[in-house]
Image (cartoon, rainbow, N blue to C red):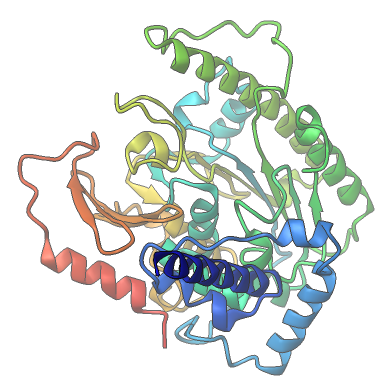
Length: 446
């Protein structure tokens, strides 16, 4: 009987995964929204493969979703978002354009005058947040936290409903011309095509370009769009750059950095990473020059940030890259905002990606709602440090405090860690904090 039981289990696994692959490809929310509640279940996704085989038409799927959303505007599954309609008053004068640049995996301590001179110059003219943290240690959750201001535990529900953030709703309501150009595409791993930029008509990917030329192509395609756009409309542009070790040949004038000289693997990865970031800095210089040449620098809010950090075994645990722990190297993020009419200033309080939507909705669009109506964050300019945040990864999340981290894994497994990702001497759980975090993670459900 063991063979029959094994066969039945295998068939059940294939059936469940096949059902999820289909539901994810055609955006069938009643199936996909359930998967986040199943412990130890890791569903497969294959939208690109199905599209390449001609089994689905992504454009028709997107159109069907938009039609369903229009017909059932008040029905978004289990979501109740925002908690109250936004009450926003347009500021006097012409609206600011918004150029939002995301640099994948940029550590804030990698920005210096030698490696990234463009960003150093921009920093001198910006509001710089020097103790800024992402809401995730991976691109998907980092992007979700910065545009929604919500814990990553909501991701699957928003993805299933294809509900964009209220921030994007305001750009549309003010007749901004939106565009998104990405060197990593819009599907996996970020999945922002069904979340952050769901419904945006102009999505330009350079993922099909050779790896060495994706960032250059991004800049070129944005400049083409910028030159052809309607000059009488404000614009919202999202540019997503991604470093690769093949982005550039060995660069003249960029000496090796021996920060990780005692760790050969970290040393090699770090200097390859530096080359990619240096090349992206040059691309950003071209984008900012295009703004200057068009006379739009004075009426464009420029935001430069990273989705998450990057580790080179900084904590001595053998971790490289990201999405492996919730220590500072993987969560610390860059945030610069060159805001016309505001004096440059450096902020040192603990800020978070979760604070970005509240800041823009209040300061850019005059929204009077308390941030709690749509976000977990607060206004960045209030200067209040977070006591705790919720940060997420692909299959776990953490309640992050300055001195300890509570990590929750599928199936209910948890562990208490210190900032060095080692168990602390006192691993007592704070029941009140856990209850507050759980309340945040269910507040926007019906």
